[in-house]
Image (cartoon, rainbow, N blue to C red):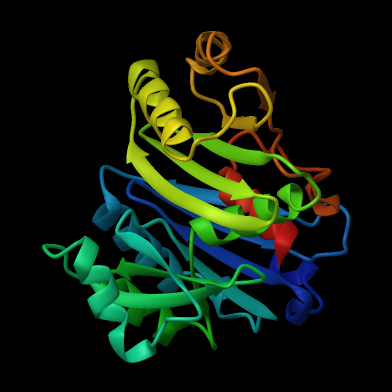
Length: 274
């Protein structure tokens, strides 16, 4: 599980670079780019049997490489936690953040982190293991912690704001399904479900569509992701919904010289929004 970093000698001004560390259940990646520099995007990943495995591998990588001690301009820690909820900023109070999350997930344990989703009027609250949080806080200068759904909401909100129709955005992953719904730029719903096949995906999409009373003829469904059943899912959804569109991975200038097949949608969205 070795990770090859860019040549330190080729980095003359690390203060212009953004470093993103992405932590998922079985996935750990490191991205680096300069926002306005063509072909500057670097992507490397560590994989393992579970999160503890890949986090341990990253800690070893960190201590064995001076590269990660460079004074980067911005360090973002993106955590893929499925223990999360959204709270309108108008009613959010920091002192009650654990109460908000515990109301939905009373049996879960972890450190509660709050992040404001820009231009939406909502806060996302999520849990992150305390040892991971403290390690990142000790290892980097002023790292910013964000939930993986934050760049998705920001990206989709921008895409939806010029539409008079409701929109549902679906991201298909190997083991989960993310759904975000909007009325123009207004955020209506966001949730993540364990999902490994077409039957589950159909159920979640159509159930939420019905619950929100979206129009089968006029409202829009956008689907992204590279799961094997995507084409069949779209064909079966076409029996129920009229406006179904494929959504490409967000493109940015600095992606031009990198293979983006393995980059998670939320990571690409983050590099576009930040």
